[in-house]
Image 1: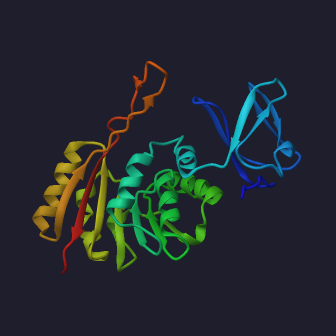
Image 2: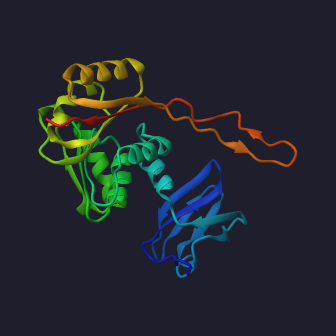
Image 3: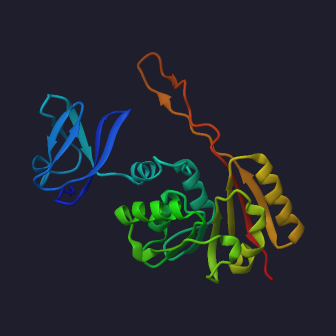
Length: 258
């Protein structure tokens, strides 16, 4: 059965690969762009996936936003953990319905939102962010899209201590993750996962060295995920000239029993 657009629904408005928007439908209001105006009243009651003409005759597609669409929108003002990396983190760390996850730092709230979707209504995400401006910006982002019953936000340096215990996964996106690996081990269940996301190999080396020296971690590995689109055209299908190459290194380790 199709899903129908309602007053208050979020919609993904697509014109072409470079011009997309996510907007909340509001009865009596309109969507404005330099390619025309769309009356939201013309969308309400119709199924997602429709085509509609703006007042200037341009044809737009109206879709239900995917997780990827929303994650990119959340990160427009800051660097985010890309969907290709977020999916790998969730899979490698075994994050699923009912998981309790600690994250630091929150950043724009992009990964926080994805994690809250993964843990479901029976899990929880506890996210730490030292910067007040980032904390407040992420809170606004998450309150727009997320179920806040699944998320606890702290404006706090994770190095001051994690409040939770018996955690299923800890995820760091920090400048100095090697300083926090002992604290992660303290709160993790044995055999559960620490994931550290770092843009530089020097950060990875220091983090792996700290885990190795502590003796508290097993199965340490580092991954890099690359993504390349394929341009499909009759007689000239080939990779695109632009790809999402290096975004960050993902270091994963399991907590050994104390």
